[in-house]
Image (cartoon, rainbow, N blue to C red):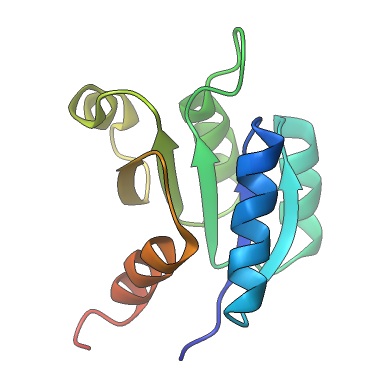
Length: 124
């Protein structure tokens, strides 16, 4: 099993902690669980991150896609977007961000790991 480091940006605390527990049980590293742009940027500055797991709707007036654009303007970290909404409309909003895709909630660490592994090892 390949090992990756993840940053989870999610406002639903139970969902975020559940993902963290699942990833760590698989031997993966979660460098942080945050729900805002400033905290995410601080973690990006100080950690090696392979993938950012980013919820699109982080509460009233907090757009995960906009946070993704800010992060990628400073760091070249791929993003895997998560949403509880229709995926097709989201893909148009993402534009040319470097992403692993968009997944519809509920999400599970094993599935997110597989998407990440396929991204980094396309021939496997």
